[in-house]
Image (spheres, one colour):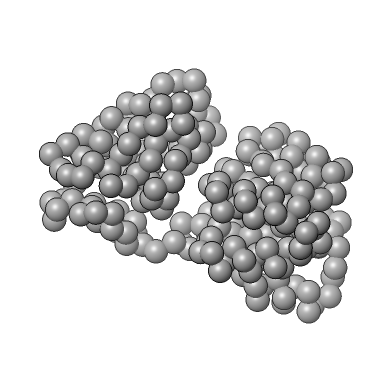
Length: 222
């Protein structure tokens, strides 16, 4: 799981970072509105944690801006405020959950995992890229009208690709999505999986959809 934390309290941010790493979760830390916006719109995260009070703007405004730009990543808001109106405001601007400081780390962890599990349901089920059609709910794939049978891992990789067309996805992002926490990132299985998927959805078709970017990762799209 990859988590973006936008929190300007260095002590709390460090505690969250270390706690999440201990749980084998990959955290990215930012401390201000502008940095959070840049990371949230350019990176691939399973959950975004936003503090309400940030240098350069509020967490409410940042959440609203992300939703306006089409970012559907689940958002958990952190605040020292405990008024009902503040919780309602967070939900109204597009936050998915709300946690009041101080909080127990175990509760934060449970909420992050629950939000991460919800993420696939937030995205449209049917996707079309060139002449490739993917129904994530029915787990059906067609190209030029021809049905294509994929293994579970091949489908998981294709799901990640179609949810992020045109974006460069690095090895860490793909590995975190396709394999569980026990996967050894040094085992060279990713290239094998990409080659198998490419053989099924690209060989014999135009345009080619999977592009390898040496040293960077993979990009999906015509």
